Length: 251
Image (cartoon, rainbow, N blue to C red; front, side, top):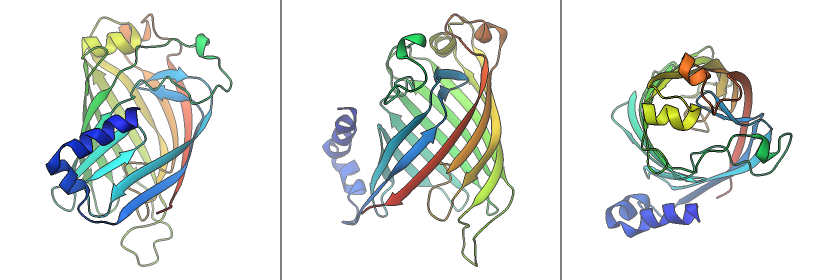
């Protein structure tokens, strides 16, 4: 139902429809994503692994991409700078597709919500990547969130004279902060400010997939701020996550 809502946004607006249908060459990708647990902004939302099917739909040369319950729009300013925005209809991140190690009633549940995310991105020719994010809640709490994220590429593998490598390992770090409403919703605290940090190792595949989506990611994450760490919605204050993504074009 949420995907149909996003499709309606696309096709009820003539200008958006014209851009999205810029060519007749439909591109559909499918695959699987493995996550050792579900987490968001330092909060473990489900402490059990998930191996879930994923898909994306777009048209060649279009700026729009439909991926799961999110609609993306990306516009490049020049070779290095770009702007990306996302309408995320299901941003709660505490609804596992199926139950594994943990029962749903064992985990704190939050009201379902949606977010509008905006990203300003800078990508160097060597693969270093830096991003500023601003997110606005649209349903549950009307709070906002900002994040600074960066990664340093370590090497290029399987490049073979191509403009982009197939495998590019990197180290990364991210620091986030939220408004009072945002932090109350996520952590049960009553103050604004820094709320989470994460860092780790990842691999991107620039030749075949946008560097926005790592194909492998190992993350250490932690809640920041005494009020947030002591919030009544917090069960764990830190954790580790392993993620792997495999996808291929089917159309």
